[in-house]
Amino acid sequence: MTFRDLIALLENSSIAEAIREGDWLFPSIESVHVIAICATIGSIFILDLRLLNMASRDRPVINLARSVLPLTWIAFVIAATTGFLLFISNASRYLANGYFDTKLVLIALAGANMLVFHFLGGRDLTKWVADARPPSAGRIAGALSIALWVAVVICGRMIGFTMDPT
Amino acid sequence: MEYALYELTGRLSHTWLSGFIQTTPYVIPGLQIVHILCVAIVFTAATVTAGRVFGWVERDVEESRVARRFLTSIWKVLPILVLTGSLLVVGEPRRSLLNATFGLKMALLLFAIILTGVLQARVMHLPDGMRRREGRTATIMVSIAFLTLWCTILVAGRWIAYTPTA
Image (cartoon, rainbow over all chains, first blue to last red; front, side, top):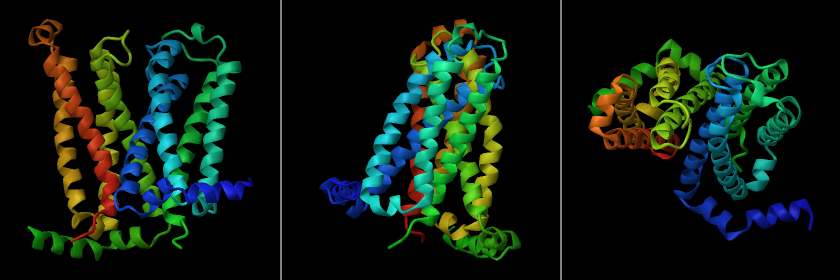
């Protein structure tokens, strides 16, 4: 099965058709997607701003991460699931949109940035106590994360303005 | 009331600012992107504050400290939210002022602002002894209403695009 066959299979599935043809299903899923995206990005910003020493300075980084990251993951899973449902409703049109493709690449880069930070830059996270400025690896990861997620929002919004209406 | 809204819509759409917003490329998407990022910050601040009251996040920090960190950020971001929202209304007055869902969103927003103040007063300014005497139920109920309202505002914001204008 080629990638094109898989896309066609998804697009022609009964669930994709129901989302595409129904009056209220697409906007309902989109509403949940927006709530989840807001919670994902907002909670990531909390940690990023702490890494940049610009907010929550009185909290040790490790405590803040343990407290906020579960919310980030729950919101991200909901955002990814609803995003996938929206995607399959018009998969070929979305794939033909440059902003959509860029958005996926940016999300992958944001995930890679998080993994690199987790396994390399943030190994001694427990030492980053309250009222202390995180080392440069942490600050770079935080700045990069904010920039990538802002770019994700820009691409997400631009999809609506550039989707081929046919 | 309806006549006044029609008249206001007509007047706004003929202003220089409205023409500028409508005809200058990237102004509307740019305003929407800033608006969405502000919504993400406000919504996350509301989620974390309510989440602390429910005992989901930041359990090792006092409620009043969490509220001081997050509820105050709502007040800081709100002016940008109102400014970008107002410019979007001036740019597309018919899409918003003659839309029932937009009216609902504005009413809910007003209620949410009042509730933000109420929650702030309860969690930040009420002495610990008084908070205990009054019990947790009232604060939890306010937090549930607070979070539900912000979720509904986000949903209403998305449904404006799907509601026909008068």
